[in-house]
Amino acid sequence: MRIGIVSDIHCNVEGLDRALARLDGVDEVICAGDAIYQYRFSNEVIDRLRERGVRMVLGNHEETFLSPAGERARLSPRVRRDALDWLQAQQTRLEIAIDGKRLVMVHGSPWAPHQEYLYPNSPTLERFRDLNADYVILGHTHYQMAKRVGRALLINPGSTGEARDPRNGFQLSAATLDTNTGEVTFHDYPDPARESGR
Image 1 (cartoon, rainbow, N blue to C red):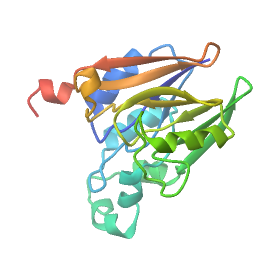
Image 2: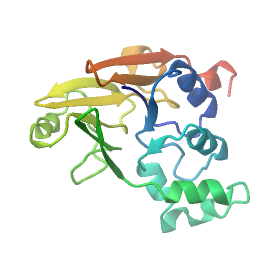
Image 3: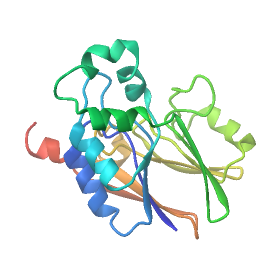
């Protein structure tokens, strides 16, 4: 099975569209959170995720948006109720079985503090040796990662909407996981929002 992975879209629907074009032909697309900003919503991004049947976990930006601190942003007339309802129905953790293997997806960390930034060189990664998972999908840092720690293959697709990773020339990115081979492929591409001068 081939799984497309996106994360940290941050309202950049053009960036998401480019990712989805590169992920054409995958069996499923999943999102590791932060589809929106903490005080800015995107009906268009949520529409794309819904249209593709994407399974998503909430990131720190969604958690703020859906909290009392985000009430004013949620009441904006630009926020469509059906899109907001879909977002509110998402969880902070996804655990599924794929091809007999266990996949866990969270935005930051499976342990408290849940919004810890886990980079490829973070000492905390050693804790994943004790996690009962074959694949762990993370977001939050906007840094690409495909690293095996014990049994678990840790994957961060980078950012699909707000590039911060100097290792790929500050390009946007998504990833594909082949569960038959365990191979992870990163898809780097320029940010269309920057190309248009926004």
